Length: 289
Length: 185
Image 1 (cartoon, each protein chain N blue to C red):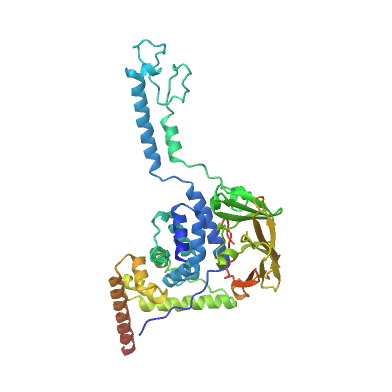
Image 2 (cartoon, rainbow over the protein chains, first blue to last red; image 1 turned 90 degrees about the horizontal axis):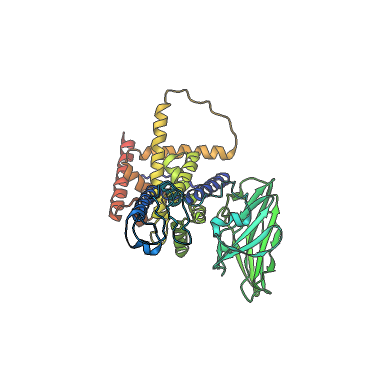
């Protein structure tokens, strides 16, 4: 077989990975807020139709007088004859006696409303907002379950939660995970922040019910240090574990360093997970690594 | 994994940027290498990888699973993006052919040498398969180099499995012939 063989594969460099990921998230957040392009003309057309319909309804004679709606010189109610509304007239509130003229909003206003989703509030740099702001695109509407300390908090919505770290002026929201922990490495993935020459890895989750006293998670880092998770209990009696460790990783290519090892102990039974650089060490969802 | 990926695709359909990030984390390396094999340039492969995932987000409602995996669909997008990137680069190279070549910058870093070495090797590989029709090259790239199954490659290229088989078979036959001609001549 004369099939030429390409050179060996190589991983996407860490800096490029972080840059592309951050760009993607920023782009996705921005674009998510935009309504489909076809919606604006459709909205405008609908507004025009609505104005035309309401104008006809307002000026045409009919049974509407019984309901206190505007009429044009016929009938015996106290309604004051009013001219047909101008399309550009501002919205008016009907008077309590029914003599008010319901005038539609201007078409352009309706079109804007129909064609524009809420203004994106992520014009600021990713990671610059509060936990509540930053988690909007990760687990929007989540409620604070537990503030562990000044830097960490857990947020819950439905059957999912996110960990939020606020370190050195940067907010890091982790990917949403199920409240019922999966028995795999994704449960123990760490976020990575590289600030001022130091690396901070953090992770957290919910301790399985009933295992509060027999549960431990320990991370062993390339520098040989082992950091055990700490636990805290929220208002609902749920126990959360959290691990954070800041160290000088010496720079260089992560892939050439020993991986972070996780040892999970539950009732004396131990499980070990090896975090894959990049895949399991970039658990943040709101900015790059 | 399959259920997991279903969640990711559902997330994309529901405009969840987190799902895009998760998909990127999972497959960025594979797409990066696939693009490199089209472009023979690591820096351009980085740009192309970024473009691929931007396209994924743009067409997120169309993302489909094949046997529980989004990877074949992703390879399909990557193949199109990298094909276009390759065309643009060829046009650019034709435009600057008359310009004097830039002086090589000395750099003794092992990684740089490695990088340049693999780019040169990939250019050589692409030169060897240049005689093949683009469609056959693409199948060869997906199946022989990226390790997709025939079914996955068929899903990526949106063609029947039989077409993938026949294109690959023709590509291999042609390459054997070309090698023979080369050694004879």
